Image (cartoon, rainbow, N blue to C red; front, top):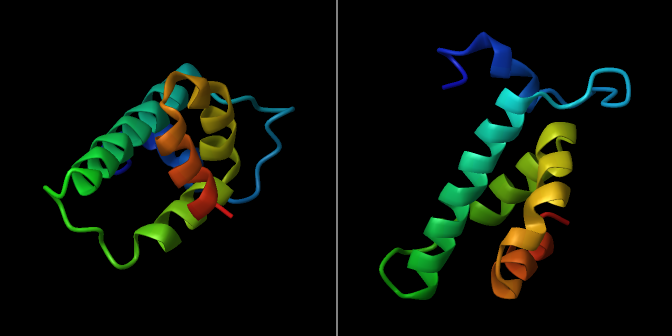
Length: 93
């Protein structure tokens, strides 16, 4: 989607001032979908249906270090079960 939707390009930018240019609704929706995908993958790994990718922790850390994903996660984390929140936050450090 990032290639097809230029308006989502900021999601992967590391240096943003969100107080001057807040997260847009489209960015929130996109990151929300990525979090839903991560949750589905986490549940599949937990159930033994999917093997955990070797670089998953590094991917999570890199992604949630970015300003937009970090901001969206803080707003959405309360929608997820405690195990998933712990998984994300442990790996996002």
